[in-house]
Image 1 (cartoon, rainbow, N blue to C red):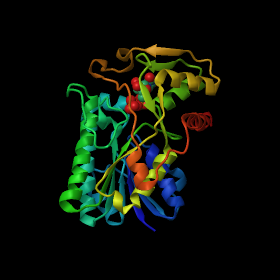
Image 2: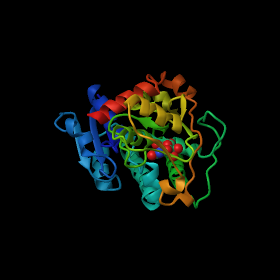
Image 3: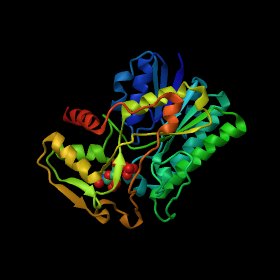
Image 4: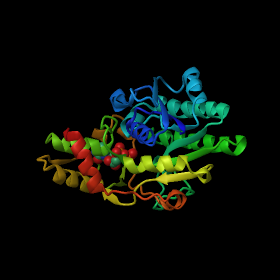
Length: 322
Ligand code: UDP
């Protein structure tokens, strides 16, 4: 039995990860300040003898220290997330991502806990050589565009994590998440699939930003969780960076059409100019494509996405109907 600490454990991905680790017989402690996470995501776990929680921020070092002292592995998911939240709260984004990760690595070193560090496909920025590979060069936009602060803050996290590994021998694994979807994900912070599904179920207009030709590939949260538990148990993954994603792309316009079809919705599909979509649209840049190369993680732990978009959407639609 391993004792895991999940930062951001009441969030969408963190709570699914907690479920899986408890199911596997591990001990799980989570810390979450409920800024974007929700207590209802972990409510069903609170009476489990192997589950513990602290509602607090990871920058409360006294609390973080106590929790880390009891754990073997820290999976660091706590971060500012969601494009809407990020472009509207750049100070919060940069401070949470940089100072939070610094705090986690410091306590991990104190107790020699292994760290799995969440990063993001955003770090590939405007790279146009697809699919994105872990050792590709990165091209970010200028500093006046808030979106790139998120990518840059996550790159600092990666640098810091890898530096702790190289310089101090701390076992650190970095993973870059691509668009992940599943139950408990909310559309409140901008994520496209929960937004479209709710709009479709309510027969409201489905809001496609820009011309809808931008493409994404979506991964089932269960596949991400399985990848994380396998990476945590794989000693040879230490000191490396891994993409976690799915390799099938769809345009956002076609995604809207598919969700409309699968829900049997009467919604119209409405193109919304970026200026109307984001408060600070002048400082906003969307990414046209974002596709992972998953060769490295497949080779390391045998990772393969188990389900395709249509099945993912059916699960998400069923969740939102409930
Ligand atoms: N998007 C959209 N309508 C929405 C929310 C998002 O058309 O109501 C688009 C967004 O502009 C982007 C894509 O969907 O091109 C994915 O957005 P999301 O915020 O889910 O993830 P990310 O941009 O980080 O890939």
